[in-house]
Amino acid sequence: MTAHTLVTLAQQTEPALGTGGVRQWILDNLVPLLLLTVAVLLLWLGGGKGDNAGVMRRLGGVIIALGIIGLAVTTNAGANIGQWIAGLFTGG
Image 1: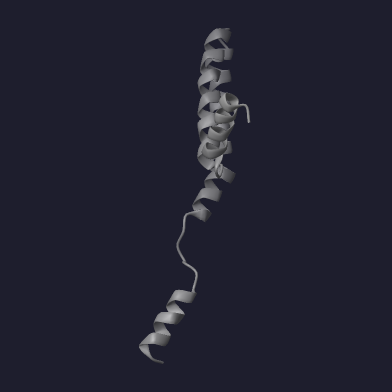
Image 2 (image 1 turned 90 degrees about the vertical axis):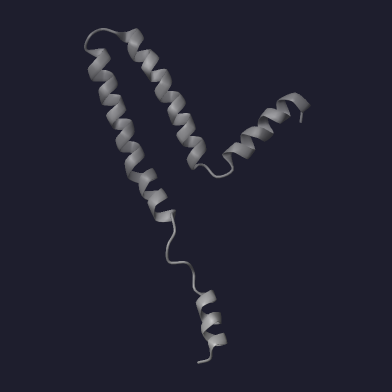
């Protein structure tokens, strides 16, 4: 084999390393586990004491955090939201 053949073969293979597997594992395992933990903590810390207003305040922060996670893991979500907001002002 010549050096040119080796370079050509090396360029035809797909990259062995990537973040796709880690991203999918986080979405499949870590996010639901964190949501379950937050739900249990909200019920345990606030619900048992009758502090319903405090629980709802914390729940508002959790909903905002979920929205941010949703934007982070969705492809082209930022561009789509920008187009939607622009459409509100341009009427399109």
